[in-house]
Amino acid sequence: MSERLDEGPVLGAPGLHSFMVFLFVIGSIALFGTLRDPAARPFGLIAFGVGLVAVSIAGLRFWRLRRALGIADLRLDDPVPLGFSGTATYFRPLRGAELRSIEARLQCEEKIVKGSGKNRRTVKKIVHDEVLTSSVVPMMERIEVRIPVKIPAAGPPTMELTDASTTWRLRLRLEMVGCPNIASAFEIEVLPGVARL
Amino acid sequence: MIRVDLPQDKVFNGDHLQGRVEWSSSGKEPRKIEVICRWRLDGSGKKSTEIVKRVVEDNIASRSQITIPFDFAIPLRGPISYGGKLFSVIWEIFVNVDLPLAFDEEETRTFTVQARPYDPKEFDELDEDEEDDEDEDVERQT
Image 1: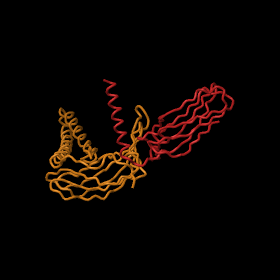
Image 2 (image 1 turned 60 degrees about the vertical axis):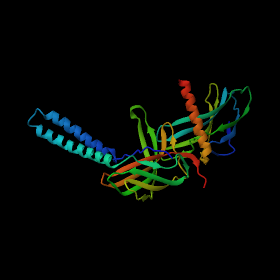
Image 3 (image 1 turned 120 degrees about the vertical axis):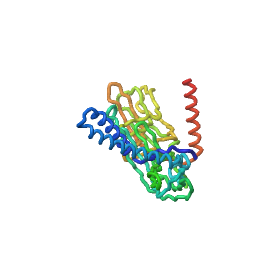
C-alpha cells in the first residue's frame, strides 16, 4: 500500500479553465489597446469585463474546491500482476460538501511517438475501458468508496518503452453537492506476470 | 542457407530461450555469423529495435557447415510480446551472415514471450537488483 499521485484533473478538463484565462488576457490587451481611443474604449471595456467575469468564475470554482476538498488517496496493492483481482479504496476529505454520485472506470492507454523534430507528436488510444461498480461507504466529512478492480489476465502489463507505452489507470468522476464536480485518476503499475488463481 | 531451430516458440519472461542456428555454405566464406536475440517495436509510430543479447561466431575457417547453439535469457521485466492497436512488440532471433563483397545472408525467426506465472518474490528481487544497480551508478558518478 502506498500513497498514490492523483493525476486528476481535479477540476475536470483543463481546456475550459485555460480558455477563461485566455479570455481575461485578451480582454486586458483589448482594454490597454483602446484606452487612448475614446471611440473604441467601450469595446475594450466590454472585452475586459467578459474576461474578468470568466476568470472570476474559474477562480471561484478553484477557491470553492480548495475550501471543500482535501487531498485524495487510493489504496490498492502496488504493483499488481496481470489477472489481479482486489478492492481499491478511494479516500478524500470533505468540508461542507457531499458526494452525489460517482463513476469509476478502469482504463488502459497506449501511447506512441510519431515523427521527429518539429513534427514529433504523441498519439494516445484507450485500449481497455471498463465501467466499475463502486460502493460508497457513508462517512462524515470524507468520501470513502470501494471499487472492485480486476486487471485482465490477457494484459497488457505496464510498459515504458522508448517511443511507446501502456498505462493502466483507475479514473473517477465525482458529482458533488456544495462544490464543483471533480475528477481523479490514479496509475496502477501492472507487472508482466499472471496471477495464479 | 540458414536454419533457426527453436525447440519451443513460446517462452516466459525471465526464462531462457535455447536453440541453434545451422548455416551451410553456398560458396562464399563468411567473415562472421551473428545470432541476435532482439525485440522490435512495430506499428504506426516510430519503429525501433533493441538487442537483448548476441552470439558471434567468427572462427569460420573453411568450414562449409556451422552449427551455433544459443541460450538467451529473456528479461523478467519484459517487454512481453504484445499486439496492440497503436503498436506491437515482436521478439525474434535474427541471424546475419557477413559475406565479403556480397549481400549478407539473413534469416529471422519470431517467437512469443508470454507473461510468466506471478511470483512476488521474483519481482521483489528484481526491484532490489535494480536499486543496487542504481546505487552503484550513483557511486560511480560521485
